[in-house]
Length: 256
Ligand SMILES: NC(=O)c1ccc[n+]([C@@H]2O[C@H](COP(=O)([O-])OP(=O)(O)OC[C@H]3O[C@@H](n4cnc5c(N)ncnc54)[C@H](O)[C@@H]3O)[C@@H](O)[C@H]2O)c1
Image (tube, rainbow, N blue to C red; front, side, top):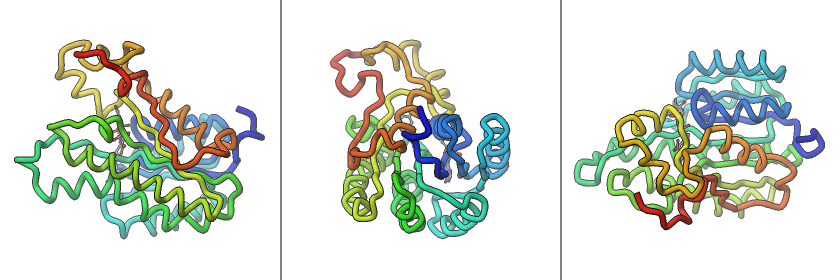
């Protein structure tokens, strides 16, 4: 991707020490964008930021932040701004998946999932908005899930958080457009990450491949490429959209 098609501003990536967030931080750095590595794992945030800086030669900062508590966002943002003066992007990839059916679900479990996956997004946008508005081409990407559209008895809190994200993004898009900021969702299918690995190991071989038209699970970098596109000027007329990166899963009639 040429520099002309990609704003050179920094991007805050949440959940950036693992899986899709990590692959996104790497993909952005590869195209020359500074990155702020936000994650609840403070030690890994610092280590990943240093590793990305040395491999790709871009400014980075590692920020340990628990996004289940909204009060943590302002200090994380202050630390980021001190290290990266120009920020023009946000990717919310931090998330947890708690497989608990509704009969067993506690209020604390519901809050734990909804807070990180969904509630943190509008409050991060609130903090970053004026800075993003000052950067031409600024954009936000929220990582949703095919579970936003596919019901799952095992995962009511997770599916609700991701369904909420799709509709939240549309409302934020209407608002942020007034400041020239775009926001879109990326909906991954079955992606082989540390979140998915224990489930893959538990279920019979082929469980996640059979319903997928392309016949395989996705790699984190294949989601990261879509995120990088939506953050770039090549996506300058795309906002309020959902980009599905699932190898043909939602659209498939194949059965397990
Ligand atoms: N892997 C998949 O198949 C898949 C499919 C659809 C959607 N997703 C979504 O993609 C995103 C990334 O998932 P992944 O598979 O890469 O998972 P992952 O577990 O590999 O990475 C998630 C990251 O979020 C961080 N995190 C968790 N709680 C946090 C908190 N309170 N504050 C800050 N950081 C926190 C974790 O430390 C971790 O680094 C999630 O939102 C997930 O729901 C994943």
